[in-house]
Length: 92
Image (cartoon, rainbow, N blue to C red; front, side):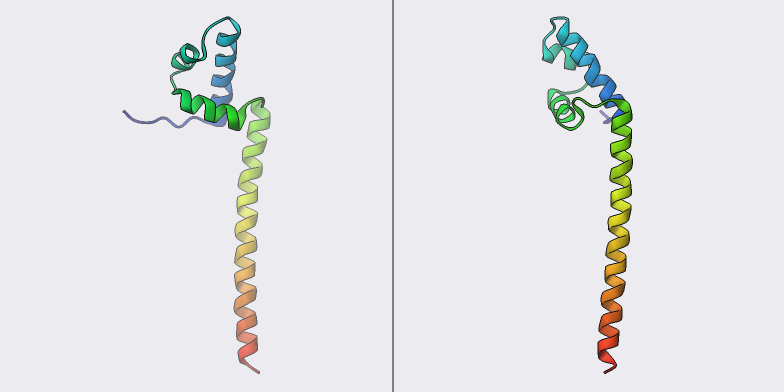
């Protein structure tokens, strides 16, 4: 059975569905079955996305991508600096 990757927006929507079902008196196990994921996935999503709105999730993901890009740029520049330092010290 192929696994489906959910977008952060879909995850927030599914978490909201579980909240509605449990607020109406349903059990968490039944609510999780109705959205089509395992309880482990539900609790992992709730830990990561619990209490967030869709726009907040989008912003967090954008910031994570930007952070990754900046970390890579810093590591590249640090490597370049070390190479130049080593080359300069060899000339003396």
